[in-house]
Length: 310
Image 1: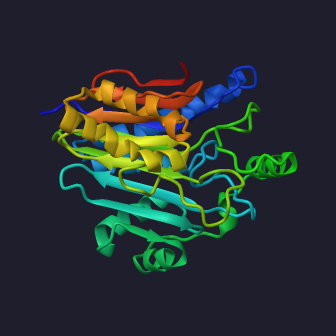
Image 2 (image 1 turned 90 degrees about the vertical axis):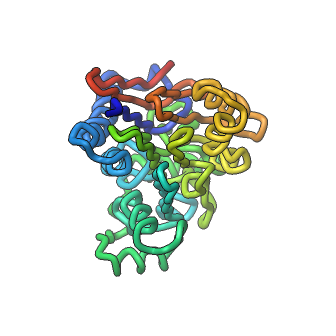
């Protein structure tokens, strides 16, 4: 039996230490810890890596501190467009959603796409109709909005800064980005999941890397499970999540070396951010090229670790 491992992230970015009060930092650590506890409970009970990453990301989507689900950022029209993806490494089944507006937990929707649609990626209102027909709960778009996110949008628009990664900026409300999880279960299976609200003030209809399998999410039992966070367009051009696995499969790289090299290469395509990656031996890599990344992990029999800065 394999010793299980789980890691999560809540976004990479420039996090102002001075603005991050002890109470707010504690809230972020608690949010990460709760997500890890939800996923770890699945693994400790002999459950699958797929179920574990699902549970962990649902917890992050339900926490308004993070840019996914409740508390997601707003586009230029002050609306939410949510993306998500999930993948398991044994058969490499995958499911993804793009630009949905009423799916309370987009990661659950991505999993339904994987398991019941016959497709990998579905988008917009037609995806929501499919999910509703499958019995999924849909909510009013206002469910996702928080006063902090609306204020963030108005500030960016007033400053004329154009689109802004949620983890750009120095103020305490300009924080976080995509969320994600990777897991290794006791049967040696890998899985990854990623969910996001995208970029503040993004052009309506813009889709980033999160629902693009191989860019924002990837899993293969032979190599690694990967979830990314950062400049979506760059992660798409770099095929970043798959590149980690490809460097391992074709170049013989270790997980740590492959993950570091992918992140090091992001500035070459205009990117910043980070990723979490896990291989079948339980090795973890959590590299980022920003000043911080909300992250945490748990290995079987050990204590939960969470971190924000380097």
